[in-house]
Length: 193
Image (tube, rainbow, N blue to C red; front, side, top):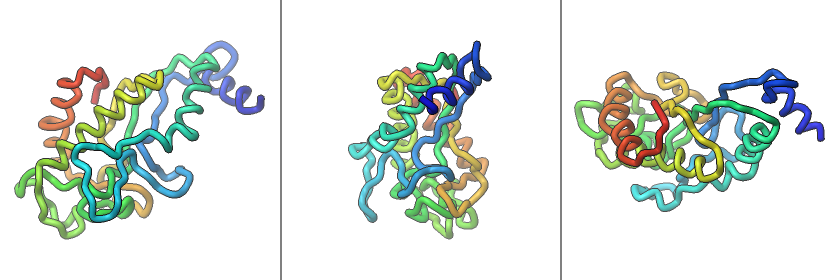
């Protein structure tokens, strides 16, 4: 009953504050319950380009029920989603924390200073990460939670000691223009960037 009252006080447009814009984390964030996670975690040293391990299971424990409670409280809000970190298997440092870049598609986009000394390049990582976003939007819609926008990264230039991925401007531009935008359009998921 107390949770319903608090949720209504935040989201109900008549009896509450009527919050109309919300942000959802795509996986772990600096307020997440431990252990940290992404939506496609695999064993260390493994990869998952097909996203066969993709799952909203952790979000179904707390996040999705909270969003549904906000909707039930009368919330008429729009939602944007943002990851704090890419799955570690996609990153140059293979970790949730301390930055690390998504392995870029070409040598021209490598950035050893920003990417933990790595000069690795392989287009499968940006391709899989774009699919990760598209799948997230689709699966959240199947849960009754439309995602209006995606933001490619929370704090892209900050290699935080909590979940984080670092991007320089050229990497981000390439990811959006050449991978994420085309993938969202091809899949028809409707979320904007």
